[in-house]
Image 1: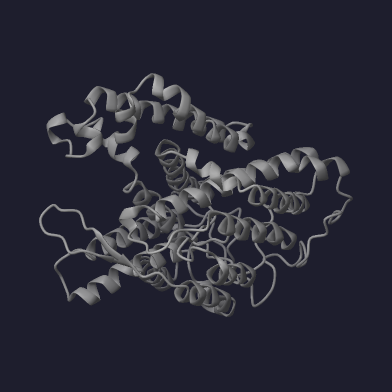
Image 2: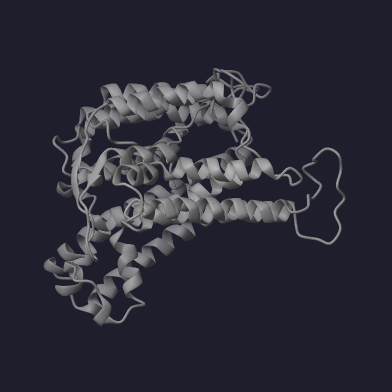
Length: 449
């Protein structure tokens, strides 16, 4: 599959967004559904004998045209139909994909380096030769990174150390975890682990396969004319995913409890994100930049939480709204192209631990996940929430089961040869919530859950 060019172009797009966007706190990164689409489109191109990297260029052209039409027609009004029902399913699906892909990658390592009594150890590591202790060390690094990041997250609200130090450690728990586990791997000299591959300086990931610019007419062969026009279909799929990703994120960020001072510019932010993603395809880069770690750090560092006592949940007191931190982060990401001598020591297993951390911690803020846990909990232990006190228990569980069934359907589509249709199936949750569920549940029940 085609890879991203380097750190600099995504950094440039991040800098432009931090300067020009209506809501600079909105950090949108490459998500699980987009990864599913990329894999499905790559498989389609392989089966049809098409150049995948060129196909992405034409998808990018259509993306720019689609977003111009949608913004010109003020199409972001459709966001009003994205109820919490769809938001929770989409967020839960992203978390599940993060968790699932983490263990898939770990299983791949165990298959490549299985546990056995005798190893044919060679002086130089070969991809086809199993290495001793590689699988076990990868498991330790992944689990260690995950649990350490989770511990530092909870340490922020503990009673140890002064408050400022505690908050600093909690806000930067993920980078601290990466550093500690990468350092542990560095001191284990005799066991091989796969490391992060980083380009040396300002260059594409694989300079032998392609250059900076992707020729829309074809890289090695002529790209079929019919596919140039047919690319509008996968472009529509990508647009739906980015639309859902950006607009749902904006809705979550703009909730009253977030204490934001100003609102969001749905059209401007959508235009910037999609248009820059379309242009990025010309250089073989992802539609969205990979922003996992900086999203966590950025959100935590800009939020001031209230102190808690007993079992009370912490409340947001204020959010420091500004453009400086996003701009500085984008600039530093660009500077990271000079950090290849350091980044090449980070094991992939450590990054798997961060993906697992992202998936698990994202579940904590989803009401659907809370209601799934209530399925296994006696009613006397249920929390005093509106969806518990104002809705009968069995009807609350029935509503939860409808979302679980939709999730199962989406996962089945994701795992099938029809995985390209995932965005269309996901968007069907909107009419399901608006027209079918009101026939089963009362209005007050739907508002509570």
